[in-house]
Image (cartoon, chains in turn purple, orange):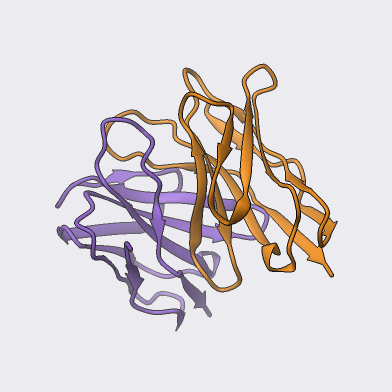
Length: 115
Length: 115
């Protein structure tokens, strides 16, 4: 089974701090994704990456950046955390495929609270 | 714009009764459609997908979904609900061809099965 591991389940940070959320997958997947999940809004795509050192903005990239130095690891960075970034963050991965049919495999999420 | 809509925030059903969780979509071209389930404090788990072929798709845990092109719907169904089916369900569409394959998710429907 694919395993996507997010390093923290719960995180509490102060406004203005730089925050790193780490995600590692063990199935050699090319694609990796960061979503945030908020009640009533569903999942919204922040950034994704389809190769090492490659990244693309999703629907809500403002206030975030990402790093993918190794294929198995995809980091989400909050440059200066704000209270409106309090949310559940979900990492996912999928293999590169010629069509759009590969399902995403998700980690268990990191619940971030910014105070 | 590509999108999915889940018109019900919550669905309540008695154990043993059939259940339906609704999803409608708006895409250009052929739709690639997915259902995911999320249990409390967990990431999303893939249930099933429709790419092409038979309009009735079977997935995990006894779930199935019916694709209806004329109504642009992809409703999730199960003939006999279990209390353990209580969870948050997300419909999703894959809008991009090629690299990335990021999904666009609906806002989610909470399914509550009572004993």
